[in-house]
Image (cartoon, rainbow, N blue to C red; front, side):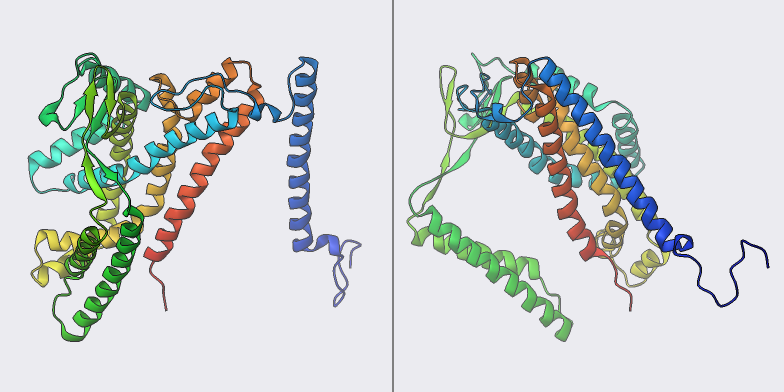
Length: 391
């Protein structure tokens, strides 16, 4: 027996235990990271002090000194309110864009597998063209070639007298509320719960009798009927508000800046091209036996896609699609190129007004981190519900 061998039956020393080694390495790694952060943070603090710049976040309560287009934001308001306004504008891009890019990407992904030669080729050209162009160029193209070519604000287009369209702002009809709208909202929520209950009942009825459930139609009928009754009971608290033009001032209606729509259209087009490829690959990953079984029971092409192929394909597609949602949220920062007042543009405006850049950049990174973590959390809940659970 050599000096390095352990006597038979004896316990090896703790420093040779694999768990001890792993734990020690992890502690060392954390210590190095924390030490690096503290070292860099201390250097930054010393530089800020040397240049007579603030090292804290007290500036957040100081007057902003910037204006936000298409907003009633007061330049005398504190800095934190300006950042919240930018976050709200970014949120409006994300909350509207994600559903649109999902629908468009799914349609194009399915179209790429179409048996119609023309449809498949058009979808292929779209994907191979759009996804290989930098998103910033698409944003600039849409803004300059589409939005800026609309009529000027002094002479906007007013189709059907329902819309006011110019290269500055696009406004359409909206819903105006009056007293009783809150009660109607409660009634609508009750109707939604009733629709879900009816949908569950129709599903069980279908399982017991073999008849088609038509749960969506039943649910919509219950919801629409409940809301309609509540609308009249509460004294018709909702009405249509049409935009009215008085010189360059637009009152009523609902809309946004041309820059907002340029960002929305460009980013939806770009991100949908990536989603389309994910959907196409996921459909091809569904076992061919599933399609053959659907054909054997005489399902139509739409029924095969609706009930067999897409439900299985989305189990495969959803994890990579989450990454595209995150890319969409982060790409909204490119709105600075066309002057849309999202959180990045407002942050750089504040830096230009003399507020400390390190703290503002840190808050900007935290804002995008919050967007990304929220999107990941919500979509991962859906992803877990879609996963198959083995016995």
